[in-house]
Amino acid sequence: MKTWTQEERYRPLEDPEVLRPLHEATAASPYRQSYHIQPVTGLLNDPNGFVWHQGEWHLFYQWCPWGAVHGLKHWYHIVSRDLVTWENLGVCLYPDTEYDNKGAYSGSALPLGEELYLYYTGNHRDPDWKRIPYTCLADLKDKTAPVKAASPLFGPAAGYTEHQRDPKIIPHGDGYYIVLGAQNEQKQGRVLVYKAPSPTENWTFAGELKVPGYEDFGDMWECPSIERISSQDVLLFCPQHLKLPGRGDSVHHNGYILGEMDWDSLTFTPHGQFHVLDFGFDSYAAECAALPRQDADQGVIIAWMGLPDAAYPTDEEDWQGCLTLPRALTVRDRRLIQQPLTALKKLRAREIDLVGEPRSVALPGACEIELIARGGDLDLALLAREDGTEGLRIVYDDTARQLTVDRSGLAKRFNTEQGERRTRPLPKGLHHLRVYVDHSSVEIFVNDGDAVFTTRAFPTAEEHSLHLTGDAALHLWELSPAVRDDFVV
Ligand code: FRU
Image 1 (cartoon, rainbow, N blue to C red):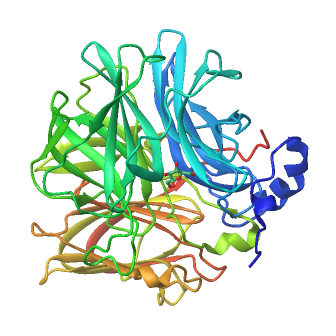
Image 2: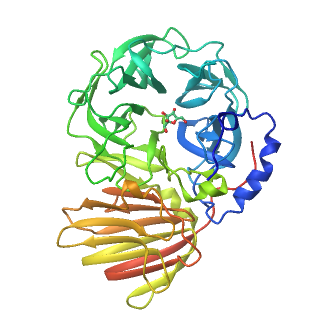
Image 3: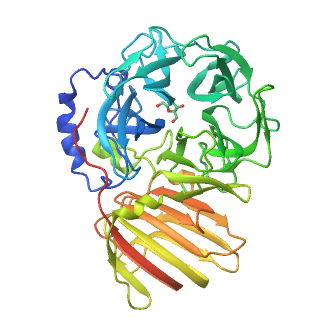
């Protein structure tokens, strides 16, 4: 595995053409996705600035051009009209000022008339490599030329460590709030709140968000946001360096608490416990889209299909990361429910006939599988060998009423210390699965969004079969491509 010098990781991108050979090598990988957002070269992490603006969905992602390494981060810009097909627009925010000299880190967007305001963390490092995080603003009036504000909206708050980042802008009442992920000096995760009468100036520190019962829950809360979904308040965040039952040695989680937000007292009162957003393996830094209507009953959420401090098999091909599918988000039975968007149906190119018992078929690289359970135990193997062994197994135990996703049978194993099996109880049994397979990912929607399991998967040439044991009806569609591997920087 390549070891990177600091100079290599933080090399400024002056001439995009230097990336062309890297892009060509990357584009030739068998693990390139055909309908998931992925980097033109290098590494993709968090989705940023997800918003509907002037008839289009805008989305940005954290991008390090140089390889499978967390180095100099840019905001890469993509657009879509339907959240299914996407166009690469290239870099929007370069880390090119004093305030963001070592990265334009994560943030969010606010559409206001013609303006699209981008709020992001300027990851400044001084010559001694001491980090000073700034909350910065850029105005994107058209799709190509953001204008950065001359100075940051605010710098770091006193009394907290250098870990203060990921501004989420929230219009509320007559003004605006920004919530920011932070760590206090006792190394506990916190959310800081800032407010202003205008989106562009006079920002002041309002205080720390109180979340009773969660004062000691991980040492840093990355990417926090407060959303209103199905008329309920939701606090979403990524507590770090925290172990949760059933999640192996994984210390990075993305989850949420339902509750009630009081902006006057800056208190989020939980109604229930912390839940993970995804029961699978690779999901982090989820972002809800800023929608045209404030009280939209349904949100849209997208996440990084990856984890911090993790290595993936494509690292040796010099690239890493992709985003999940955007998903419809509602609240049902005191849980967030994520469902695939109905617009995805337009990708169905052809339905593949499934006959014979036990059923087995060669899977296309990009496909959708629907399973309607008829009762009893089930074992659905995906990306298995032709004889039905190994692969990624989705196993339903009807007696225990639980579903397990096990990726230990894939030839290319990775991040094994995080556990290779994830189990979720299904007290009402298993009724339905909808599974989206792309060339290096699998997303499993259980019982109409009751639970989602997301995982990267890197099948070898021998691992392309589906095998089903158990009583269920199956449908399989090959899916058309929806992202293009154009070299746009
Ligand atoms: C989360 C994160 C953010 C940060 C960004 C940098 O994955 O660490 O907290 O802004 O990635 O790329």
